[in-house]
Length: 179
Length: 310
Image 1 (cartoon, chains in turn brown, cyan):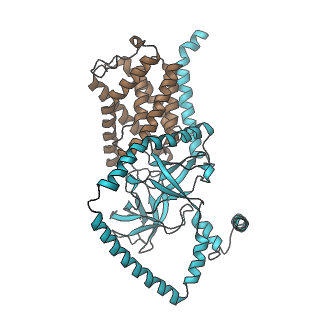
Image 2 (spheres, chains in turn cyan, orange):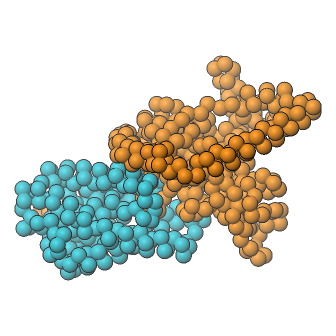
Image 3 (tube, chains in turn purple, blue):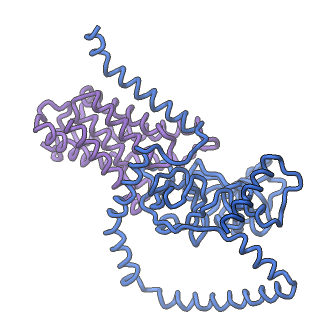
């Protein structure tokens, strides 16, 4: 419960911070901190069900704080969490580079799905090369930022679970490794 | 049985959450009453806005100090230019007033303007959209201050957007260049009517009928007042590029918004929905020759309300 609340609070703080950062670094240059926290939870947390609930709650919070359809980010955050959770055990994400590549790709897919689902409900949404480029740049920024977020979330999980980090699903063997 | 449930608990939770999210999406699109957010979501918005304002203080202080005390290189030249501009505008204003007085229309316009004045509420921008694929802002005024979904939001430069959701002390504003945004607009010079539609980029599109259109680069785009959201005559932006779509029935032009969204800090909420339409009825200058029973009842109620409040 302590871990759940700590991660929820951290996710909400990240969202609030992102809203302020976006004033200084307009899209696509501002990292998607909400998404990165969800992915980091998927990489660092052991429990699947608490993680799913966290992903849904944080996604719903993104929906409240953004101009999107209600439930859209909640759905995509759940999908991102599941992808990260299983990737942590199936893929070799020990190096920082592979972690960045994985999260960058996931971020790009997230953007594409967001666009696709939105286009089902909003008319004349219009796909453009500019949008694809922006999505790519945004994915790149997210990839660059993720090691720091994973480190923060890893530390938080370790602290809140009384340092039982040996049982974490992902062991990041990099200089930025939190442990 | 319990073993099966335990084994399947994660897929069941996953399925339930996906269903909940999908039903939220469908519910959101079919929702007719887009007023206050549910209390838990409203609470999140109410907490977020002051927190974001607090987080923004250091940046605002540094930015303010830079603008006010350091970045004053062109201040003298700008001051001279603005003074010259002011003198010119005063001359033009005098000439226009003289023309109006001589034509006997000034009194009538003053009377109309009194009728057109609408309550405006100043609000501060607390934060930007947390999703990079949507364009909205959070402001620090909510339903307790009289803000409702559908209220237009402007600043001194022009149209900012429209309130989409409110909590008691905060509101979400959809910016005019968001993909979900569309507003009825008119070209000031040629009176060509069309729709200004957001594309998610900083430059929305002005879409108009090719056969009747007369649009050139540099044309000023204003709200037409016919969409039922924005009052008539507010500046939306300037045409920067006219696309040639060959024989297409509809043409489009890129518009540079009048508002500098990157530096948006203070806005005004017009505390009236569908202002353009309501005001035409209120002034009595334009009355529907054959209003439907619903329209007649609405207009009557509106006039009664205005009379009661005054």
